[in-house]
Length: 188
Image (cartoon, rainbow, N blue to C red; front, side, top):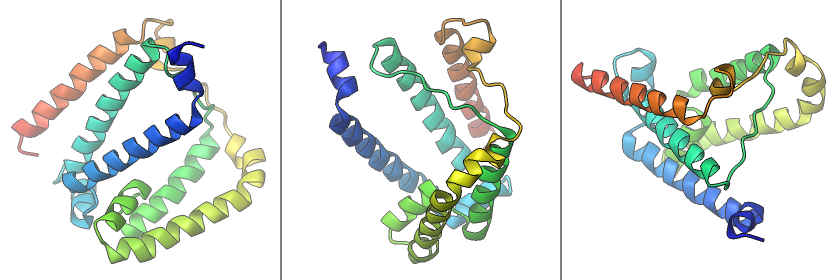
């Protein structure tokens, strides 16, 4: 077995790396201010683009990192089959929690880490209740509404005729960096 196959088959290593990167991402969310209720509302009201900048940074790093790892044979692409029903249900549940608390699941964890009592009480309880309800209802949801309105799903390189992914990644990275420049130039 090659080293790459060994890494790919080592579940403990994958779990450890996932935990490490999750903690790092949470730390960066806190440092960037995305666990602050005011910053979230500023983004929703379109006067503070901190959250957009953080998420685009994550997309940029994740996109480049994933495709580098894929080029080395360390990861494989697994694309879920989406449906209109699953997106609507997921969006409604996410939006309800986000609107009530002003935090998403990732920022709830970061806010708890920085000591927010609101996030601990409302966020953690909401996440546990939501997770429990989803687990309980999933067998029915997966056969019903989750399959309603299946959407054709392809990656952007597949939509472009199975081009090399880097033909998409490089211009996307340049576009994200350009958007950063525009936001900074406008003082947003």
